[in-house]
Image (tube, rainbow, N blue to C red):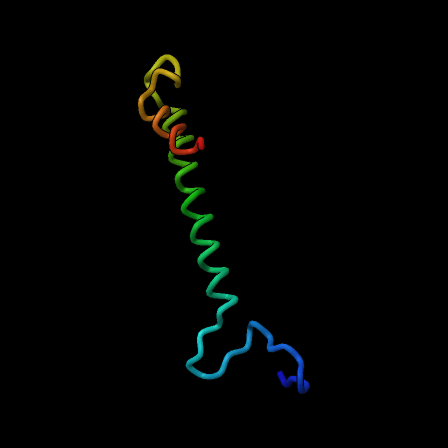
Length: 70
C-alpha cells in the first residue's frame, strides 16, 4: 500500500522487523479482557456449586466481591 506525501502512516503497516504498535496494543487489551472473563467464569462456577446456604456466608465469594468493589 503506497501513501501520498504527508498522509499519516497506516497503523497496520510496518517495515521489515518493525513492531506494529496498534495491533500489539489491541492484543494487550484482548489479553486483559480474556483474563477478566476467566475470573468471572471461575466466580460464577463457584457460585453455582458452593455448599454454603447463602453466598454471603461463603468466604470465597465474599473475597471475590472485595476484589471487584472499589
